[in-house]
Image (cartoon, rainbow, N blue to C red):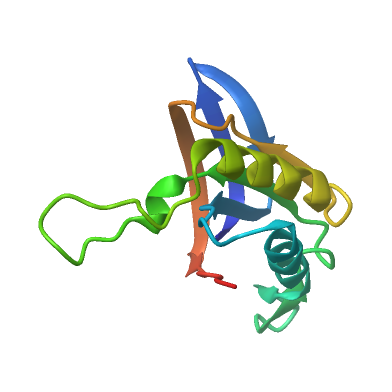
Length: 141
């Protein structure tokens, strides 16, 4: 996930998701993930203190700044490049399972965050963002 001052996602030249300050969450679903994993990650994101306070110290949560999230499905995060020159995606969840957990993450996140926007699972998306910092965090269960 990346801390951003703004981001948007397009599909077929149409903006389908647009946020101000907050996080862009690139969500890769592993074959070993389940709803409990999704909930744990979403709750962790809510608690993380990655935004600057009045002194510039990274000390505020997304809720404290009224931040928003943009969720993008990205199975390529599960790429294994240890052997050869072509990535293996054997650790990624099968598409049906990944889509179900991606949709569940969006649904669950709507209970936790000010505004939740998202892309379309499996679509060719164009994501534009302004990464603040830059600040990028990798969360794994």
